[in-house]
Length: 358
Picture 1 (cartoon, helix red, strand yellow):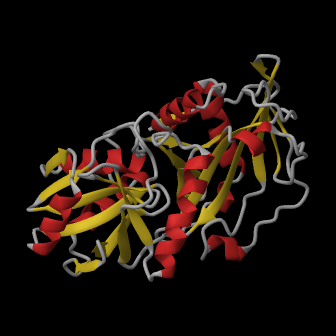
Picture 2 (picture 1 turned 180 degrees about the vertical axis):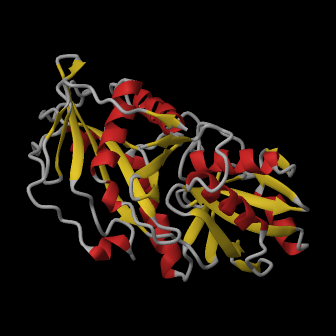
């Protein structure tokens, strides 16, 4: 494990006068229900990052003309920290998250904070609010780094001022039961040359409408496909999508329309380490429909920071429900999930160097 113990002297830390922590936060039941005591804040102006601060969590003053509100320059990351003991915790794959954060910011014409600032801010923030990390099985401390355009002008322009914020909060495990998903062919999450690979706010806002329509029809999420006469399967909701077809783990390749998921990458690494056959390739909707119809599709699941693994029980394609084999504790997706959790919780050796000790 990597361990960083010193924190730059120029970064001021303001302790809270009274913690908002309660015992109910140790057993969160809803994602985003609780927010920890502190947050990291650093402004960008005059072409440089200014004094970084860790302050009590609270509201911020923002101009109604802040450019993020009008033109969408807003990028975030989703990460997690895990409790090892009362005195130690780990943050999972800081470097990989930073790389994705950097690519997203560059795509949105936004300044990139230094890797050391990003990493050190995370470590000190988690160290201060370590007690907020739940020890309930499957729960963790969610970490949300966010940068948005804060300049107060309404002219159409790239902002010259930004605010970098990191906040955290305890979250439960998600999608413990198999979900019903609908293949979406009318609406598209991303197109080639767009921002599909970036974690920018507009990608999520644009996905709400078709997702709400699907939920009104009794589904939990949608499967996004590419445009064209022979569409390919891309993601499920805001998660990467993986299939086990004829004993092969198959997922769509990374592209500018698909988010480079850190959980996806971790699961694929573990699958290959276990000797599984893994294919990163295009999966046409026709192939998926045929695999469902002939029962060659053995498992399907979403993979993401929030859910880790979200088992899929039914896939609806062109109005037809295709039930998948029953999800059981022996399902292979859970072998990957458990192997990943064991590394993050320090139960097995971190041979890949994914954990940063706090």
